[in-house]
Image (cartoon, rainbow, N blue to C red):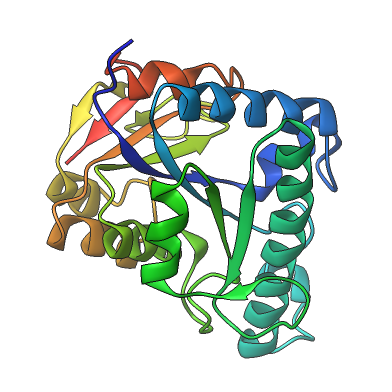
Length: 236
């Protein structure tokens, strides 16, 4: 298999790690994702990963009006660090060297994010898990994923979701929703489609970073996307 994309940033939602439970971890599923990433590495891919924190904390939504936005976002950063630690250990059990880098200083949890060091790890075959978002409140992990992808010079962003692409509306609520095979960033912004938040979408557009949105329900889709198979939705 020849890879269409060699260096990629995979964004995985925290909820995807929890499976049907909705919270915590479904380690059987996490292991299958790690095995697919391992196969990708063996084919020569270089992979960085950003994980959301929604399986533990959904920011302001979980704050119930009692937690201020800045505090809620910082709690979300800690949730992503927890996810990175767990997934890194699953990777190691699969025989993959995984390194956690954090956008804020958390001694003993991970290394402080450094672009040069991250690229060195990627080039040596290690998976890099980027935790704590951008390190600042008011920015989502979607924005963090695009930022890290731009920093490491990724060929594409793989947006692994619980849905198999970008639709004109939420297909779970609107049965007539139409799936896009390909769509421009300008259209995503104009139609206010829930691909990523507008900040992340604009950042990806400004840096000419293609985004492939696909379903993580089958972790082998990671390999299919890297191979250039047309699944999900291509955003550019």
